[in-house]
View 1 (cartoon, chains in turn orange, green):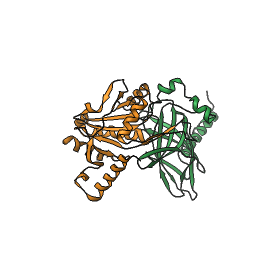
View 2 (cartoon, rainbow over the protein chains, first blue to last red):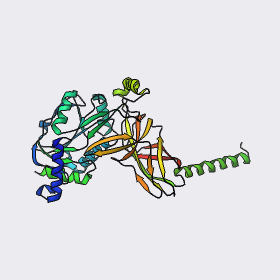
View 3 (cartoon, chains in turn cyan, orange):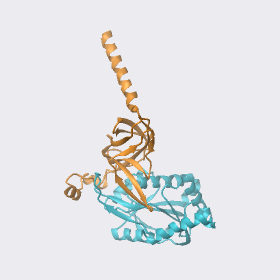
View 4 (tube, rainbow over the protein chains, first blue to last red):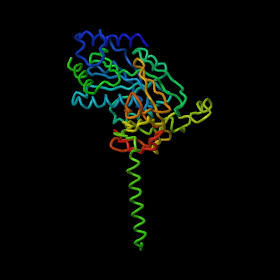
Length: 194
Length: 170
């Protein structure tokens, strides 16, 4: 496991154990926060995306792949529901999906994927090197596996945290898989208020 | 004109099929409740436009493997009122080219999805298939799964036989 993820987990454990001020958040708190590494990739429509241009919004960054039927669409659906529940504040909450599977996730495929979710998020891709760099910056693990007993040519083991960036561009929180939608809404609202 | 006898025969046939429909909604011991599926796109573009077979994997595995296509997952709660343990051993659906049983293992925040040969349902117990745990995986979706629609899936149990369900797409 990457040191970054490990330290984040320790931060979560500490927040829970000591009821430090950070415990007002429901998600895992990165203490101290750090400037979110920039993500410069292409959207499903071929437009350039730069995380640094998203100041003023809370950004939820998720690394996954469209072939994944379970963890990825579940997380994207929950983030989308959180966005809806934010009401007018939802305009200041951006959900960004970064593919860990550029081989299968062509822009055309990403466009269909985004469409299936009603356009509630932006999907990003790039060269394998660019994507590897983005994963490294966030401590994301993604390992391709050829697995026996499935018709899928390969599966990808990948980190399942949502990285949450505040309106000032600081990486503040990590949402673990399975975090409830009300808890997500709670944390996003707190970040938007500051 | 139908004779009264043929009308009777048709009625019996209808009654018979109604009985089959009721009986097949659950086996004598297996009950499947709240089946649902996650919305998903059939993904006709991308890899599927080049065909669903991945040549590299075919060479390695000796059989056709799927490079692309849309995927989906079906979830449900399965309870077993019988005195014997049972297991979900297979599933099928007309909505997909291939249907498999999978589990997702969370190892320190890294999610690993793997096929499983069966999902045990203990005697007098129940298991919940849910995101991040077990699911019935649909590979090579033939159509989009849109919220509000239903997708028909047949679950096959070791002892309980076939149990058809209609999973609501969410």
